[in-house]
Image (tube, rainbow, N blue to C red; front, side, top):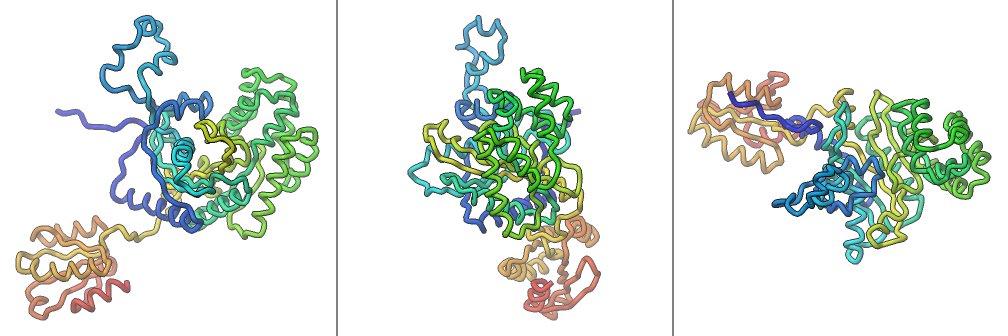
Length: 455
């Protein structure tokens, strides 16, 4: 007996019903992106490793899927290198390309490569899959879609405010209750400076970013293992534990970071952002969270994370400001800011809360029962008219038993079935059956189209 086929862990197949639901998410997000003047781009699934490596921090680099070179890729590798079995030194000899880890770094590469063809500030959206060699678990996959929107070529904090407006708009339309958490990497840099560990900003942010997952004790242990002094770790505790409203935390930060120029710059940026947001009438709550770090090294200003308040789930959207990501590729001084919606987690939230719409423009609404060749010939011109009217329609492809055809319609959740036998043909009419209510009507072609269109 042949072995049952399977797919790699951390990846998924999607049935027609699931794809319809996913498209509902993608179309909702895409519609909002377009409202704010964003234009679509696409980039290849694979990039040169030189583009990807070193952009996501040490931990991010480990999660990159590398692609083996074509041909006899191992023949040119020196024997001494093979004997040492050092994967870090061996990989560059075997692999020159990798699957993209996110959409932001490829976007920066795109901007530099096509700098003479795009208009700055450039507002782009991109909805494509990314890959991470992570340990699969609930809500975390190795292959998943990101839905990104970025503005590059502008320093204005109005861009951050509009991106938060987009977040609010999307989750309002999806009927997901959410909270937007904000912080600023300059504030984190200021905190590192105040506690006397400004050179260990990356270690501090990577550890803090795990606070919710592993708890404060494990964060402190990791900081000490990374070489952060015990005194610095102790001085960090009251800052991470700040209580009160966003306004009250801001007042405390003014005092705590008074001696740090970069820290005060971060506080001022957050104040400006909150001032922009105040008159926007957002449905989604926005709050300052000093434990928010987002471990990606390229963030330099505002950092954003969104969580649903309806259930326990990781972040469903995130992003931030990056001041010189394009500089890595030879175009310095171009600031950008972006957000990324996690389609997979949004799907899980909508599914568990039963928030997907019952009807979809992608499913069949009408099925013609097939009674034979004569009836086929009678139905086909009307089937064409229904499709021309924008009504998703199909005819059962063969004159099978009525029970089989009706079971087919029920399993596909088709709303209407059209029957045309000898009596209907004699009257030049059709019987329309509502599969949900059982109601039947005898209608002309025009009445049939009008009835279905209005329902």
